[in-house]
Image (cartoon, rainbow, N blue to C red; front, side):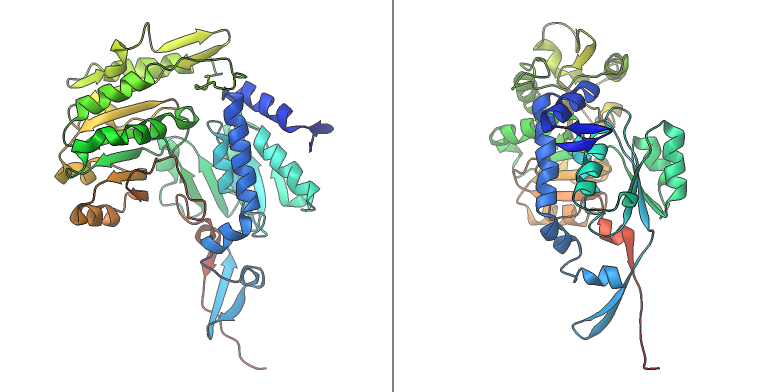
Length: 397
């Protein structure tokens, strides 16, 4: 149990509370809790990786000598501001290293997911971290704005408008939709069937709620067959109660959100060359209402060209567009991409992928977009965001 308010909260109480407010099935809440525990248990390895083997005390003292060269690192803020989301508790792994770096936290939790910040703060306090190191301020958008204005460095999680608003602001690192993708080179696309499991996993894991879920599959040919095979697999999915051990879909707990998303998709389907391939495999509509919760059934859209507006969309459920695009135009057309899993062995295409500055995490081969190596940076290195390297010299006085 971890202290919570005037009492304590067991892991199972935490899971039930988180599931009730976010709509995530309880089994996914447990998985995300284990993910956070894993990151904490590997913190030394993660910090070693993020600092590239730098001695940790350099960040505390501010200067040292390494391999005969003076080095100095300066913290850019005594505390990191966090404006957190409600979509997936897994994002909390990004800020867990901050306390070990001896930088405080000023947290505005997500409106539907305050549970992880409070639980982590309670665990830190139980471990001996001073209570002054972590402050939590629940509230609406004005609280988030106050956090960003008060901290020298902040992370904010939001939609594309939030990313655009803070683009170029060195004080704020904005995390938005991932637009993660799987791309097929012409040398591998004829063998697409052997990668179907990877595609399904990338789209469907964590009920499609994460920025690392695949929202686009791009290929020069076989796109209709790929979309049809994905649709047939995913259309069999039906919502189950949140406490069911195999519940596959997360619910939308805010009234009207599921209907609004479905209507936006239907509007995009009016464009030429755009088809909802899942429609022929499911009985009824895309929205399923069960009690006070709404569910969106997995949706696979086929696009005849990258010009379709829906090819650049991402939603918080298992949603993917399969886009027909020549390999030669693919990298200029895919747009910003958090995770790209590339199915190609062509050296020239691989080099173009390596050179593409709009791709963050890059996988070669059948790696699900949802499979992360925690010893690698995610959307930038938090060490480089929180500390700056500067010149430093000393002389005898």
